[in-house]
Length: 354
Length: 77
Image (cartoon, rainbow over all chains, first blue to last red; front, side):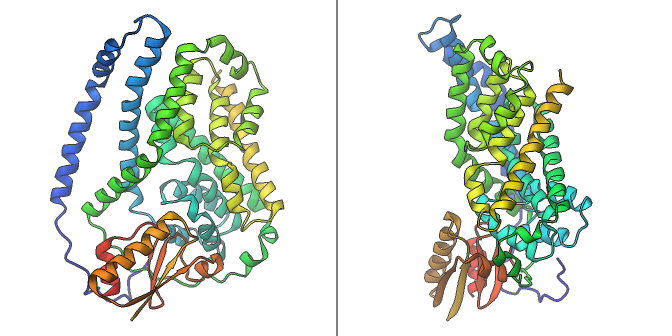
């Protein structure tokens, strides 16, 4: 966005110094690290206070729950904060300007990557879709963005990192990007512009020249804090519910049972996981603690990743929203292409990490 | 009299944004008309790609996420 012609804003208030905000953030980070490092001790002490047989499954479940809940919420908070700060550097309008007229291929890669860092809310999916397409962003490139943005989000990455480890979190990031890039590219190749709803094709996007938002460091830190309040405030109950279910699986479900239905030998479990995941609507927050417990009990990672992606990327409410701009035919192509991509990820991963 | 339009399909944030603008206008004693634009084609016509958006006297001043209170005062003033 250029600012060549905008007059300096005389009404803007004087920006205060960012120093206090930076100091508060550093202090908060130190407190975070201190608390995090004593969590195992605190959880063990709290478990010992409960009237449970220390060697029994109930104590095992309680220890898991009491340690994991604060740990996961703290790590999630940290990741969401950092992502909130990163996102303050991006906006949907700027991303659109970067993508408009991009060729397919490069455009798909750029769109999927920008999908991760651009602020996105599913309630904004339709205005974003129309805004992109009407401004000359190719349909397939738009889809790459629209697939990556909800799938590779900070909650999914933060929770995977907290519960299953950074390797799986990075794998999810990589494969999520791959699905978004390839699916978008395929949809672009199919030349389905004619399958948009008629009114979408007729929309003329007006030119927009938003006032340049000169943000201070304090503004960006505040954006991170707002993201924590907003996102963690919305998902904490899901996280705790998910951890409770995970704790129950840890304590009581036998290993053989999970391994037999979700293990690597059961090849049909990948398509089954994708099929079950599509109509399911949970967010990453509820599903990942359960996923962690399933992995611990012998479920194959590829199967579990496929399940997660399917639950998060293809959900019934999202399809209802997209129905407003896509014809049923195009929606079906979208589900089929993304579903096949996720399926491939599941099989590939199980094969690679045998 | 300022003419303010809130662009958004009717999500919670759009309502919050409308309430913030209304409250700020009342606080400053500025006379405004507040209108919500929920039609997708009309929203796209303003050129924004993220909601909620705010239009003051025909000029888009904000798009995506909740606005800051001090900014609202600047746009209305």
